[in-house]
Length: 163
Image (tube, rainbow, N blue to C red):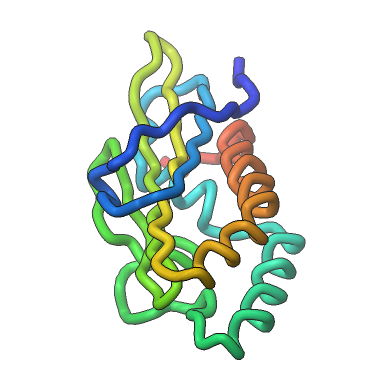
């Protein structure tokens, strides 16, 4: 049985971004064992639905005149979707980058939740550096929450595992 993802509290400071001044986290219980943080990150953020890609295109067009980074790769690091991988283990993957207006991290944590389930948490951490970062986050927060919850729900879909 898969439960609908739900918000969970985040304690700041967080080791993935100690200066973060904004955070949210959503958790989903999935009926499996052996899911790694890398696999969970790839399944949730590796390929956005069309409506999310359209919102990202609009976001990039709006912020470009302000000198903010778009969604493209900032360098040659390993990427999951549009996000650079900053660190990884079987239990946790940290993605994100720093910009002039804010720094952000997406932390995907996977842990056992009983004998037949795993809990997957997606935490977003943001350090708003300047007023533009605060304004930007205020505008995108409703979209962010919808996107994160939608992407996390992708883990409840069955997948075909190659043998």
